[in-house]
Length: 580
Image (cartoon, rainbow, N blue to C red; front, side, top):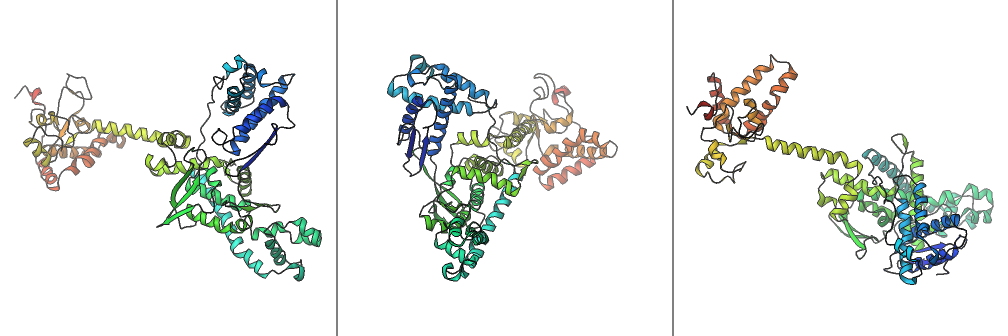
């Protein structure tokens, strides 16, 4: 730490971050906040990464600037009152969209720092201490969840990224090495050759710039053989690395922040077309190091993309000696040993512009944080929502809340609900169909319904006695119809039995059912198609798809013969016949 208004933090993994408030207002307050923010960067103190540090520092700075615009004096921590927080929150909510979460996130950062100060220095006013017992005076923020990209957009992203990767492969494995092989030391062979300048670039580990060339041979030759044009023949650019990273995230579903920090030794245990990838997930406190198993081999598989990245970035890695996977040469010459979040965001905008990517006629808003949801949504659809395949890397609750409950999957969920209701309705309306073998089993062991298709109890044996025979089925209870009122006779047409849970259909009912099927077919010729479908379509489908397939071919043939030889097959419940 260089001072309370300028802090430089080195995290345990050798990443650094600098916060400079030396020219900002409210320096007394910022000094106290800065000292506490620096202390929170120690291991286990809550600020574990440069990204978190920068976010909290930004929140504190915005607060200090707002205070300076509303207060005439420099404030100390002991001067703070609840209105200083509540007023800032109101200002944030007025300046952000209604559904934005940003106001809550900013005020939460400030409250977090102030609580730490209150625990240590005890100089907060009593009213401020009470105010810090809760985070926000307003709602957390009702905002739309981050959604997956549509398959149409994903196809565009894949095609554009693959085109960039293919170009990088040709350039870095064929054209560049071929031109370099022709090069010689330009000090003896001359500077007026692309091959010789490329030779010089290689001997400077890529960090040979146009300015350095101009100082040696003049601006005219430097313009004709500029290193900015030639270096990408040997060293990958940020565009190359971004395309590889984009494809990898789309194919693997790894979190972006974890994918960006992959190292050159991340591949472990290749076996039969699969490989493990070891990665660091900083948010998973206590279990930061994780492993996923992915497909390997093909250039489009996650493992194949990692191997491709290793090959294309090897020249930069040799020069930097850094372990990071996504290394590249910047446009100005320096080599970058990592692909930062800001560089990735900048390249996302450039990628969309270069490839003219659109979504519903507008330029595509490419947010890399949506790639994991896009992958998860595809897995969810492919597996039909099977959670065991979907929860990889998360608890079931987190997977369901953050990756399944998104707008692009709403149609799938609504269809699942509709299908479930239809299945429940179908089950409720389905008759019990007994094959001859099941009928025989039931007659011999009437108390055992466990092996029958509808084990609902002792009503099945009674329905086979003939006392409750109807035309197309036997009936469990003619006075307890699912279509009517308990205690009153069934009010619906006889062929509703085919879709009634009270109905029991046996081989003995096949002749009547086939006779009714003949009647249905004869009505088709003299009834308008729509009317026929409304009256008989469902019954016909139930007979052909649900009832007849349950019986043997011989049973059906015998029943058809009976149906064709008898003119009247009408049955009524014995109760309605007065016992005769």
